[in-house]
Length: 151
Image 1: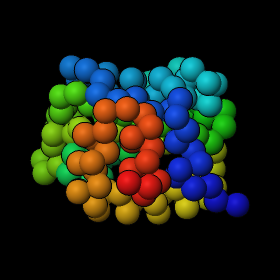
Image 2: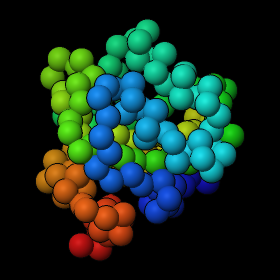
Image 3: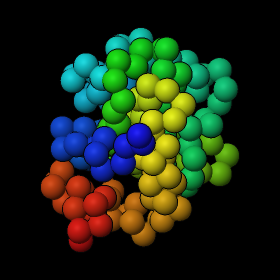
Image 4: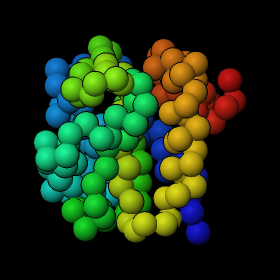
């Protein structure tokens, strides 16, 4: 059974207008809610950063938007997702999609159970006006209303 994006991104998994200086800090900060509630281990954060160091900014999936993730065995305890908007955009050194101003973090337990959430994420990745509304949201509640299309 695949889980919806809005089921995974609970209020405590949303960070609004965070200040970070580097893409590494952006990944680590976006993952903090997942670490705090035990969905991932600290090793998972290191693995996400190491993957970008090794393979380049492949997680910058569309202009301005990142889906940080790593392999389940790198430290996923249970399926979860978080999201963070940035107060100031950060470069991930992507040739076309920098700068980034919204970071999603996915903790998938296997290859299948997150596919519904991933399809919903792809719809957001292709909808810049919706991204801009999410980034402009001033509160978690406002962000969630936009994400759930209640706006």
